[in-house]
Image (cartoon, rainbow, N blue to C red; front, side, top):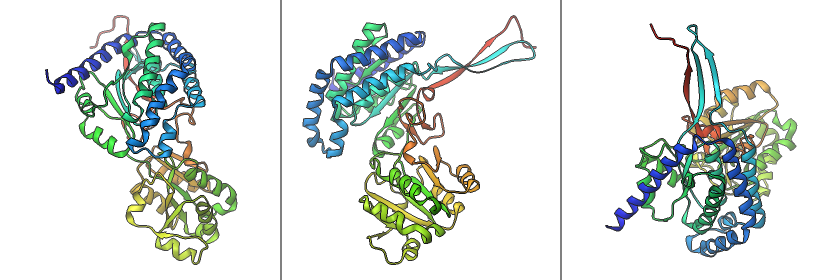
Length: 428
């Protein structure tokens, strides 16, 4: 047998076992799943040294994979990081179990009762990059919502992911959860991803979490539905009159851009109403400059600002589309909220938009007009997050409209079916 056939056979075996395990999982009680989550958390704490020993191998190899210092820091499993992992699992255990809940129910004139019941998607293929904490988070959400999951992490975190996976399997054995409910792909061969993407008879949905290149590759090759977001070009629009609360406007803008720059819900594009630029444009841009942010401004903004004490460069058309994931922001002056809406709908990736305003009617126009997964009024873009929205952990933030949109928590990992109860009715 060739090496290529061996890889294909391996992938088929993993997918088939996941499908079989999903059939068992859907019939297990919520308490079994919660016991698994709590036991997993306990093992993470007890076997911290083994986890960090595996993690050290990944940290040592990180520079050879071209990881930056920031990426290596996200890869690190510190004492606090492992405690956060364990706590997150315990928090998921406390969330309501969505599987089997009744979304709606109605009794028809002929007496039949029609229930709409929430059910798991089935088998999820989850592809993600460097951060090993995602391994535990994704497994927790998938299992709690009644889904089997195949986890394919990046090669940069291979040893860490395998060590976490080993603990999750130990917890499964101790609590009666089928071992194949959570499976980690044991090869870093990229061809394995291509094989899994063709197995729609076993895998119900694929979720990629990473850079745009990864997500486009998965979307183009998948034979099953994909829950994804391509990019996070998020906008903050500062409305006319917002200078009345300038300190808050500056705080929200800085937090949206600078609290963590390399994440998908960070602000990449700043829209300023023309009256605001005249009233306080220099102050808001100076505040960003003092945070080390490069300002790429449109011609109108530059004209309205006049002489400034900080450097700016001209914004191109590409800048308005860009997801920088770093200390750069595009700045555009618009006439009013209507032009801000039009700009967002043209250039945004559909992830997160913010309006900072003192005018409720204009806030409502912005909320209704902007077509993105989350729209925030007078709050930071960084709040578009499953934990911040009260969903517990999240498996990703979707910019799709089907089947899920925005932060994907437990309910987003379910579908529904209709269950009908009668007492002998027949259709005439």
